[in-house]
Image (cartoon, rainbow, N blue to C red; front, top):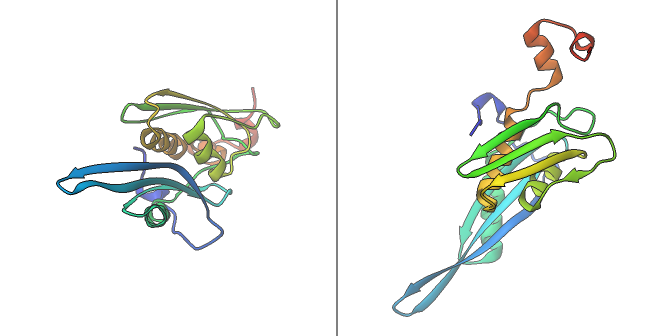
Length: 172
């Protein structure tokens, strides 16, 4: 995964919105019967480019969701958003989950499936085309989407790296 240390963002308690992606009930069979526990995957984001994901496991649903939210706040990254969409097309991968995200024109909306939609909307991307290939497991899809978002480079960073102006970058 492309989580570089400089990409991490401090969770300054600004209005982070939580979105439950998946809740899984797990049964452990013991001598006394079945013991149920819950695993929750949560995505948090401020809608302005900060995004994080977390996993929480507990015997109680609300406790597992709270643990997942706490975990997500520890894994925040900053995503470059340019004019309501992403700056360039990008692939992401985690395990068998592969995703492809592509910038879209204004008014397109978020064209993405379940787990990817939650991640992209939480990040604050309004127009994007996305395709999930490979695994449909929400764990891998969420992590692959965040991997793709973490690999994005802002137009300013690309122009600076090439040593040219922003106007020259968008010519031709």
